[in-house]
Length: 359
Image (cartoon, rainbow, N blue to C red):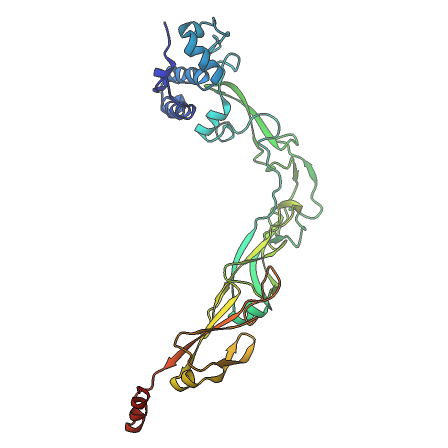
């Protein structure tokens, strides 16, 4: 009987490659025997996808129709009589099925070789938050932090073995670190490898564990470190301390420690990038006649000339009085916005003077 692969996948004859792939994934989920589906239907949708998912085979199928499935147009075997008893004749796209079922390593434990083996691992990276004073972030400083993390065991120096313990090949895996077994699946007999539960993939075992770390080679310890805060660091940036993360397993390298910087707010200053902003109050007379005032910056007090006729909300720039550029040369600027104070509770004479100014 002629087979309609488009109907099997539930797509139109002009469906795109992505539509065909999406339809196959949906159908494979629906009919997968391990999920309680119909094995015969699963075979049908897989056979359909092996043709329609291949541009050349799809072209031949569209041209020859039912003759294609009987091997008259390029020798397509379908499932070739071997069914699911083995890989011969079962043309299954591993990548697509891996996408569907989360990867064959998750289903079957990995194929061949040492894929299932897990040896000692490098230590984890850690992250801590560190609050820095506003002016310390501008000028830089040095501080001390204390934090707990996994460090190499001080007794066994990371080996996990008790002093004088005898080291032998693991009797469970024969020193391989993995255990192999044959598992029968819908795809046939598949050899899988898993990490040896006794030696955790090392292939060797000690006759006695270190009493301090119980064979883990690492213990939780509190460490105190001096940290240099670079001048110009901004809120949200990180400082990396190489090797101060968790210690690695059995002599593997330690991870790194990342300090996420939080710059504390300042009562008078605000910062945007490398520039600093502040406000100063001046009297109406100073604004009208001009003056020289003292302005506080992150680098100390400086003189600011207020020209006569200065308007409210005028912003003045103090060059190079901002924060140092952490990733470049030079410094930002300091910007001062002036607020003109309007006097209250004027005397009769003062009122008359202001009235005279209207003329």
